[in-house]
Length: 65
Image (tube, rainbow, N blue to C red; front, side, top):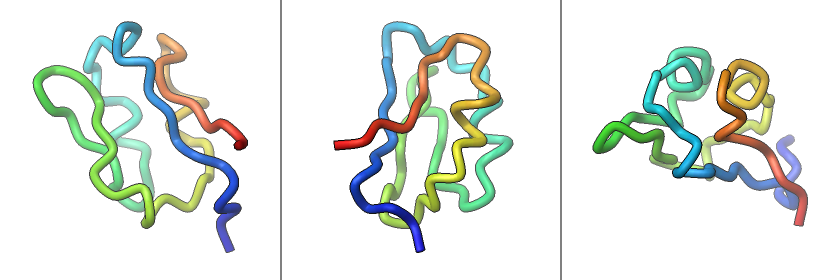
C-alpha cells in the first residue's frame, strides 16, 4: 500500500514539459497541460518514484509531510 504521508510535488518553474515523467508513470497519473506536467489524480499514485528518477530537470519529486 502506498504511503499516504508522501506526496507528489512539481516545481513548475523547472518543468520543461518534456513528458518523460508522463511516459514512465505506471498508473497514468501525470499529463502535460499547457506545456507543463500536471497531476491528474494523486490518489492513484503508488509513489514508486519513477517520475522523480527520470526527470532531467528535477522538477517532479516525492516529499514526505
